[in-house]
Amino acid sequence: MMAMIIALASFLWASCKNNPDTTGDHLPPKLMQKVLMDVSLAEAYSATVKDSLHKGGSKNIDSLTVYYRDIFAHYHISEDQFKESLDWYKSHPAEMDTMYNSLMPVINKLQAIIPAPAIKPPLPDNARPMGLPTGR
Image (cartoon, rainbow, N blue to C red; front, side):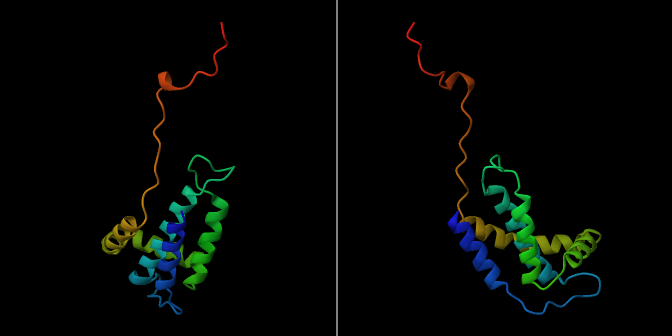
């Protein structure tokens, strides 16, 4: 868990940019890649953090809202700019594919650094403990 936080922080630090350029009605591909990577990491992290309200791997919307706000502030963009850019890229699938394809090496590198959490498979019904014997 700590490794994931450190990796996220180092990625945010390395991708710091003070004045993002916008190209008309959407963010440029390099900036959009960074924002999408951070948003994806935030989404994944919000689903892995377990607390008393989010035990089953559901997204913690409260923390996700804070992550989004911090990501947008970091890149000096608004939520509306992000949504408009995302809509633009969705309507231009070739640019979207190019952008995501260039993200794959970064994602693969992060997956190599951050081990996947160990998931315990559920026990079959006949292997579950039945409780203490009653003594009869």
